[in-house]
Length: 215
Image 1: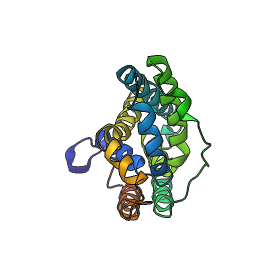
Image 2 (image 1 turned 135 degrees about the horizontal axis):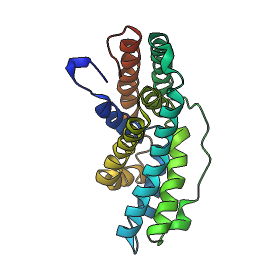
Image 3 (image 1 turned 120 degrees about the horizontal axis):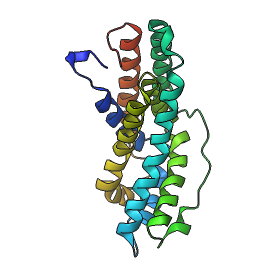
Image 4 (image 1 turned 180 degrees about the vertical axis):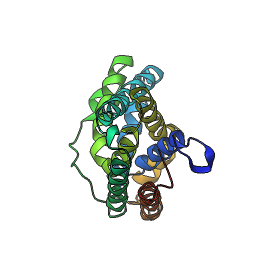
């Protein structure tokens, strides 16, 4: 539980981490292709629903795994909390510096164009695997938070994290796709998102180290 302001804000942290992950530097150039495959052509509603299921399952399983592993660390209490806080600070710095922990591999998403529900699940899973290394500093931060939760709570947190990615994808994805394909290139505001978002993650880690925030 988070004691900040007397409320549990871990759900909001997960949602904000997901939104931040959507704007990861190596993901932005891929948005036009993702939007073109998911939101165009026949069976789009079936494919869209399948995409959401496949995409969410990948991160939900990561949340459950992180929480499961975290149960073995709970006995160390405040020491682990400070170590996790320091790791979150490092992830925030990596995000600001536009550095990935793992390198992503290309996925041919166009082969899923025109597919239905099952194809959408496969597409969502494939894109989820692309997003893992691309957003690794942000994802690492929320996984460390999930590691301090029960398996059920960790699962919910990473599901909410996937919602945080899906919301801008489904709301502004088309507009952003057009902006990125008509010659705007890498948007100037991207660096400010990295700076503000990374600073937010660093602050979260510092508060955990100082014992001002218990997640």
